[in-house]
Every structure is written in structure tokens, then in C-alpha cells.
Length: 323
Ligand SMILES: Nc1nc2c(ncn2[C@@H]2O[C@H](COP(=O)(O)OP(=O)(O)OP(=O)(O)O)[C@@H](O)[C@H]2O)c(=O)[nH]1
Ligand SMILES: [Mg+2]
Image (cartoon, rainbow, N blue to C red; front, side, top):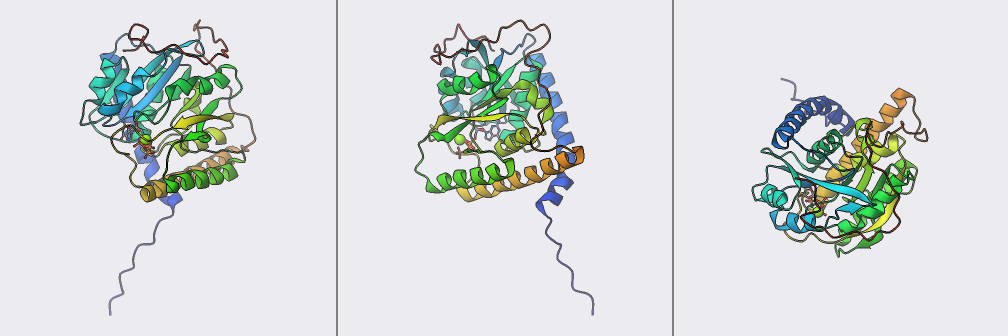
């Protein structure tokens, strides 16, 4: 009698990660290099202002214009640039974003929000941003609150500031979402050994220098990879209460709640294992301080002025320097 075929053992999350990570990284890095080159050709005079808002947008033509119109020209007295990363939208997302004054990095193939943001961070750094902020293209966040997040960076009280719907306002009636946000925040607080109340808020700001110290490999569910990476590198993380509304129009790209929760949890676990191992290999402890960050570049003469007044001027086409 021939032996029964053995069904393959399911791989652990860590094993799956180890197997796919190097390939993903090299392919993605090559894609990013080409996209940065294409951006340079498209915008030969490109230069990012000290605060650069990076927005990943996919099929958001109905929302992106209004989102861009609400981004202030200055945050904490610093001029703002906006960079939209659109990868393969089938609608007019890129054209609308350009019309509303943003730089647009557009590529034909869709890779996911995480890949788009990673490319946006690289571009923002390469073109001179000192503080990178993010928001979403679907109108869920209030860009007038960006100053709340940039202010602790400018004052050097934090390196990374994330919005928190639980400390602010969460206008969702979806109880599963409320529960998910709560549960993931508890889990992350445990492994981070500090209180985190919102692990997936898309409104955030951080010192641009952080980018070179963290590993970003997740093509879609990026929020928790970024947050855990920053915490495990020892950077100072702060939260500020912000507003989160239902999206203005269109549908979520993250799938129904169960799928979203499962994939989000998987990314959280695999990132935690990765960062834990990396710290062990380097002999680092969670409480060790982060590498020094240079805010600004040599020869950069823009003054960083702490600014207590959060009233920001409204967007005006003349005031926008980007695009
Ligand atoms: N460039 C790019 N952007 C994406 C992609 N997927 C999502 N985005 C953008 O990322 C932002 C967040 O995506 P959403 O689908 O709203 O996901 P979410 O806000 O995490 O989840 P919801 O609460 O369900 O809305 C939006 O601005 C999307 O347009 C993608 O594949 N490529
Ligand atoms: Mg959304």
C-alpha cells in the first residue's frame, strides 16, 4: 500500500514572513526607485516644504479634491506641501489631485496603501521634508487638526505623534469597529509597554529622519507596522485626540470588518515578532533611546518656530507651493 500523501504543515506567521519578506523587499525597492526617478522627471523643480502631507489615494476622485482644499498652507508657522500617491486608480484621482495643487506620484500598478505611503515617505525625504504628516483621501480626518500633531515634533517633545479617535471623537456607529480599535490598542499597549489608544489612525505626523531607521514592508495594512517599528526603535511616541468621521463617499479598500481585523492582527503579530528578534539580535532593549535624528538638512535655513496658536489660514490656490 502506498503511503498516504501528507498534507503540508501550516506555516507559522513568522515562517511565512521570513519566506516572503526578502523577495517583497527587493521588488518593492526596485519599484520605488523607478517611481522616484519618474517623479524627478515629472517635477524637475520639485521641492517639499518643511511639513509635507503624504496621502495614499486609490479611486478617491469623489473625495480627494475636498480633502486637499482643507489642508492648511501653514502648520505651526511652517509651510506645507502635499504629495498624493496614486497607484493604478481607475478614476480621475490623480487629475483631481493635480488640479487641487498637490504633487502627484502616479504609477500604473496597484500595490496597496502601505506601499504607496512608503513611496510617499521616500519622496518627501528626498525632496526636503522635515516633518511628514499623513491623512487619508476619503475625508475621514480633519486636516485642521494637523497642527496638534506637528506641534510636539516642533517642540521636540516627541518624534512621532499619532491621532487617537478614542481620545478625540469617533463618529462611527459600527460597534465591531469600536471593539476592534479597543482590543488592538490593548494588545499593542502590552507589547509596547506604554499606553496606546488607537493603533490605526491615519492622521499622524513624525520627524522625517525616522524613515531611514524603520522597516516598512507591508503593502496594505501599514499602520501597525509603522507604529510598532517606531516604538521598538526607541522613538518617543505621543497621541493627541483627533476626529474620525465615516468616509465621505466610496467604499473602504480594506474589506469587511472580519477580513480587516484578521489581516490587521496578522501584521501586528508578524511585525512584533520581527522587531523583537531584531532588537534581540542587536542587544537592544525596548527602553533604550532611539538613534539621534537630525531635524532638517545641512544648509536648511527655515526656522522651526514653536507655535501655540492652532488657528490655521485656509487653503488658497495662490498660497500652495506644491505642484
Ligand atoms: N495609493 C493607494 N492608496 C490606497 C490603497 N488602498 C487604500 N488606499 C488609500 O488609503 C486610505 C485609507 O484607505 P481606506 O480604504 O479608507 O481604509 P481605512 O481608512 O484604513 O479603513 P476604513 O475605516 O474601512 O475606511 C485612503 O485614502 C485610500 O484611498 C491602494 O491600494 N493604493
Ligand atoms: Mg478610510
